[in-house]
View 1 (tube, rainbow, N blue to C red):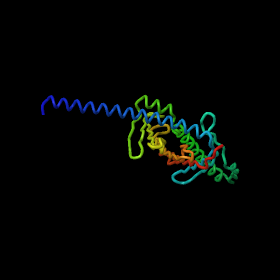
View 2 (tube, one colour):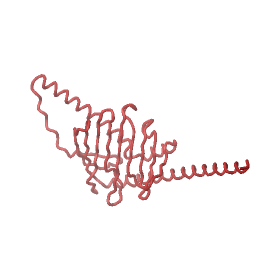
View 3 (cartoon, rainbow, N blue to C red):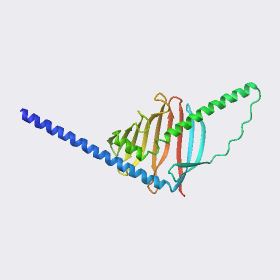
View 4 (cartoon, rainbow, N blue to C red):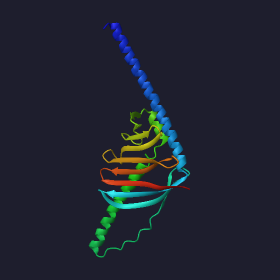
Length: 234
């Protein structure tokens, strides 16, 4: 092959690579725009609904607490919750010094895992539902990549809420709706990992909503599972 032919082939290959990069960038920009539009529409549609949320807290695989709430989104778009559970009955105080000491130890451990569970839920709420402004900021910083797949595609976002975290959004290409979210983050530091899995479903009118979330505090072996059901228009 002559040098001229080789240079021509290299130019064509380079040009094709540049075109592919621009096409991918255009596709990513389009997907981000469609995702933001879809989330805005669903947020508006969900404002018409009320639903029941069931929260189950488990420690080392053993269920410790379950709560039920009536939920609706407030004027600010944030969920407003009303407990559906009866007020807990007062626990009788154990007799004897040893009994009272054991009861205080049990109560302290309960408070610790419940406080940690609340911190996990608060962190999860920074990710779910995804915020269109944070997504746009991540796109502007070049922190979003697109991975096409059969029947759908994935948007992988890094440094979304915390440095070093990752959020993978799986999107149904036909419906242009979220199917699931997988998040790897952490609490106070990277050694205190938190994993979050979110599943979505559609209501009869096509509104997309979070059907379930599972938050796992790795170091504490603590899991907070949430199920959303009984959606009704207000």
